[in-house]
Image 1 (cartoon, helix red, strand yellow):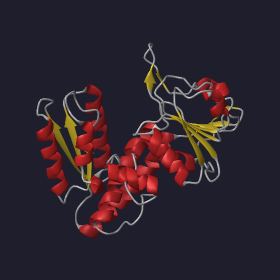
Image 2 (cartoon, one colour):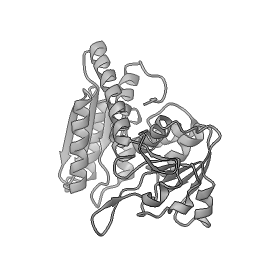
Image 3 (cartoon, helix red, strand yellow):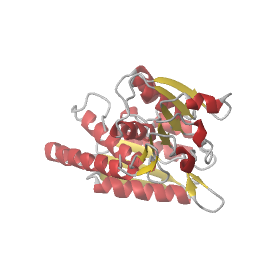
Image 4 (cartoon, helix red, strand yellow):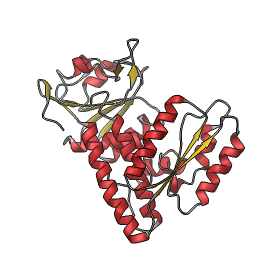
Length: 299
């Protein structure tokens, strides 16, 4: 957490700095893995089609993984190859002992069954944490791979010194990628958790009762400053672009800093953590495959 005071008691949680710290720790782990096993942790990224945003995301992931000391393989497929070819590529990566983590870049082009592709990934290599086996492990408290963005949110809260044990937490958003796994992680840390969404009745009042508020609904500045309990920890997962081209979160930041105890900015908060957690998951998967990891990654 930085020392930059933005409002009475409100400080930013510096996602860039914390992500850099996680990536440095992963690099040390990858170097140790190479020294012990004679090969690097392996990450395979599968990209279907030419979506510009996905192209950027994949380039960033590839660069970060190389910097972390991983072997990186990018499988690029034309959008027209079809479901069967994509599944065949995934199955081949499942069988490749040099690949410890598999990430299929979502969303897939129209005509693909994304759920079937996710189910096809070996759950021990599912570094996105989306396979039903990993979802079940998360909710049952068993070791498994956790979706990267929620894992990053927990890391930010921990680094900010936010006490989760016994805290009242509200997660605004119910997606399988962020909202639901975020709730499971908070429950696992003994928080009392409410999952809300855009149709929740009396949503502002509900948010005002939260010691920890996670906004992941995908609506620009939906959460207003007076929705926030004074001193609360606010994690803003949203990334929205205004008509003027400005990136803003799901929280009205300029209002929220006058009430929150700590808050993540957009950009520079949760965003950088996602790739950092992907790297951490991949290292964990490699260590587990070698019999050296027995619990969920601590990041």
